Length: 277
Length: 186
Image (tube, rainbow over all chains, first blue to last red; front, side, top):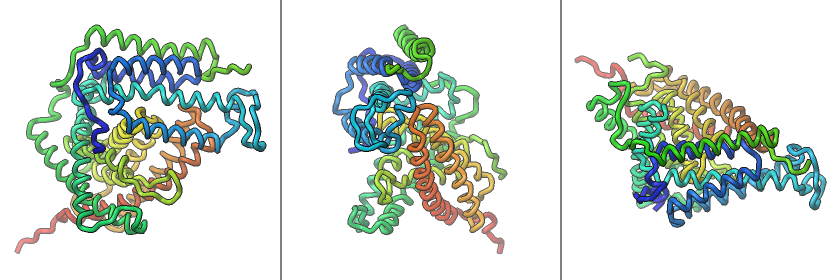
């Protein structure tokens, strides 16, 4: 059921054929450029770009539905919390007040606040398509190979590969243990008191963790026996050589990042775009 | 065998990989509600602290970074970087206790429990009350009072998770290991 969140299905199109490294760099460049800039125009530009890439990648809506629900709930909550805690933060940032309507002194709705909060939502939303592209169109083994190629130590990259490899197994183990314990009468639902529920969760926890510890022993012995970690470098079976398209996309992503910084430095003079002055 | 603070053996790598996978599974599915809305006690941090104490700060750092980063990416499409960094830092600081513990030879007494908990509380306070909110403000320009409130709640929840679950797991684990010098010649 839930492990379907992370399924990689091989396809043959422009985005799938890019190397994992390219997609990672593009993802990082795009997210950093929207993280840095608070200019709604530039963020919209990046958002449109990301959606174009998303169309090209041919990811089906079914694959990302669960994720979208989580995202929507998260954004809504953040939106409400921000307003609840700092209803005048926009005014503080932009330095002006354009009142729309007022309930009481503190919770007056201002244009500045709306701009600030909408910008924030768009900022977050524009990172998502590329994140999904990266997760769903990259072969996990190739991902680790790409990490190694941009200078991450191969041991850390290998840890990442192991994570991706064992994550589905772990979910299966968790479900098996959980069902086994429930069939023995362990109640995890809301009917049980909180204290008992915590105890019951521990009863699933302990076997899961001890299985994992056994497995760690097994895998590390197997790797040691095959001489893992003896040399400073290693080669990757799944590593792909970079093609022309890879370089083009990387250049483009770097340009987007540079553009974001340029807009902030030369056009706006700060990270914020201020239409009110 | 002497334990070095920053050693990185094959076992550390494997523990990191599997620990992070476990972290993701727990982070996404196993939360204990506290009754206050949207503040769950995340069991993942208990396991994070357990693995950090068992395999050292480097493993802890990577478990926090990979685990939180990937689970954010899977659930929300894009990691919330400031909190990912804070997660890594929590596990890293907790991991500093690693050379002082001898859990793998079956020793985990009252003093060790205290020591582990002092480390994890310091780690949680530094990461969630100081580092995460400051990064939130610098990187995302979030409102100041919101992020500090969130930070304090997170610090308490995570410290409870690490304190209760981490301690129980370490105790149980130490019981399964045979003590050094437990064999006697007849």
